[in-house]
Image (cartoon, rainbow, N blue to C red; front, side):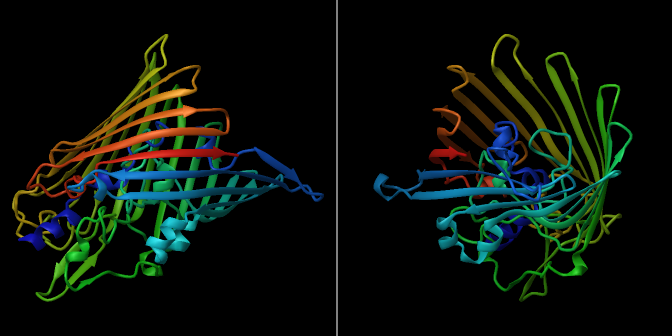
Length: 440
C-alpha cells in the first residue's frame, strides 16, 4: 500500500500544479531583471556589434523548522551569480544566460550543465519576422505567471517553490520561427527534438518518493523519437488579446506500469488544443486559458494510458485606486474524462482510492509598496482544493538603491493526512529565507 501511495503521488499530481509551479513569480517579478538582458553595460565594437552585460550576485540563507530540536534544524548557505550577455547588430542577436551556483553543483553534480546554462540561443531578424534557435525558455498563455497552455518549457522543483519563476523554468532545445501577421498578429512555429518533463527531487526533503520505488526504469527522452511540434497564433482585436495554439508532444506527467517485478515509467503521446484571451475593464484585467488534451485512450478503457482531459485557468488582477495595493486571483484546474469505472492501477487512479476527476487550485497574491517604492510587502497563497493542502508565501523586500536589495521570505506548507500529492509530501518543509542581492 505504501508503494501504491508513492506511485499515486507521481501520477495524480494535478497537471496544473506541476505546470505552473511558481504561482506568483511573474506577479512579483522585477521586469528588467527577469528579462535577463538589460542595457546596464553596453559596449560597441568597431564592426558595429553591440555587447550588453548584466547580472545579479546574491547570497541566500535558508532555515528549515522541521527538526525536534532547534539546534538540529537544517541551514543552507547559497551564494549565486547570474550573468547575462547579449551580442547584437541590426539583424542578429546572440544571447547567453548563465547561473553560477557552487552549492547546487556540490549537492547535484550531475546537473551542472543544465543548472549553469539558463539560456543559449540566437535570434535572426527578417522582414516577415524572426528566427530563434538554441536553448530557450518560451512562455505561452495569456495568464499571469502561471499557465495551463505552456507546453514547451519544463520546471525544476528539486528545491521546492520560489518567487523567482525564471529560475524555476528550465530551457529546452528548440527552433522557433515567428511570423508577423498584419499589425498585431504573431504566428509562432516550434520544433523540439527532445522531451523533458518537470524535474522532481530524487532524494532529500523535496523528494516525492520516487527513489523508494524498486526497479524503476526511466526512458531516455533525448532521442528524436520524442520530437514535438507546436504552433500558436495571437492577435489583438478591439481591445481583446486573443490566441489559439496546438501542441503535438507528450503529457508532462508519466504513467507507470509493472510486470510484477520491475516498474516502467512512460510518457503518453498527446495533442493539446488551446484557446486564450485577455482584456482590461476599468481597474481590472481579466484572462482565460482553456485547453483539451487528446491522448490515445479516447474511450478511457486503457489503464496504461491517461484519459483525455480539459484544463482551464480563469483569473483577474487589479490595483485599488489611489493606493499601491495590488491583488491577483486565479483558479487553475483540470478535469479528466471517463473516470467512472477506473481499475486499480489505472494511471488516472493508481491507488484505487477514487481519485477525483477534477483538480482545482486557488491562487491569491497581494503586493503593497510604500516608502517611495523602496519597501514592499508581498503575500501569496496556493490552496489545492481536492487535496486540501496549501502553501503560504510571505515576503518583505527593501530596495536600498537601484543596485542593492534585501529580502526576507518564508514558506508555510501543510497537507491533509492520508491524501496523495506534492504538498502533502512537502508538509514538513516550512522555511525562512534571507537574501541579499546586487544587480548590475
